[in-house]
Image (tube, rainbow, N blue to C red):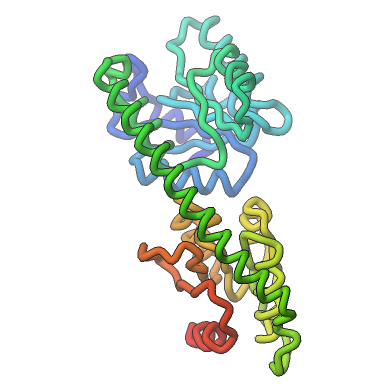
Length: 314
């Protein structure tokens, strides 16, 4: 990660047909969210890219004026100056100085067609929905790293790949929804029959360590919070992915736990972030998936003794 203009100038690049003359792509990523910056940097570095970060639109414009890039990833909603205004200023600067245009891709949580049309009308070249899908980001970066971007064969290949990804996402989403529905039914039966852990003859242990817990429903969050409270843990729980990601770095947790279905393709990146914060990542296997994860996997079935014994070994 480099923010220094001096370092950037030392490795400034000669652009030919929008492609760096060096083996690594130079990418400017503008996003005010530190978690998003971490995710973008991790993925892009794995794609052999040099990444320069900007926290807002003003920084993005200033960095662009002093350096060349192969691609600019521009978050739409940023403080001081938003992505649309920053993109317009960059494009105007390029025109005034007869510079070749650097492709600008909007990163946005706005999914309305009218919003996307606005970004294209402002001069942006493409857009990507947030939260960012790793495979889609890889396809986008690879597409801008090739000279023959306009070749019909490349365009066709990209459309086929995107279609496969879309179909896979739909299939995965259906499976995830089914698993979540099954889990909610099981948990609701527990609630309807008043089988909550505070009614069990389980002595509450003294609370001396904390758990950050991400669950897919308020009912599931309540049940597992009660379970971990009985084990002696202080529980910071949420059903919001944004709140979960923000809290990973804010406090020291013994365990950071999450439903696998909540994080999708970003799960391994989140596991890395948890490990960097010196917490132990644990995934609830809601999907009953056979996929191996680089963290402890816990059954989503509510079994006090089994979960307690599993955590005791970590």
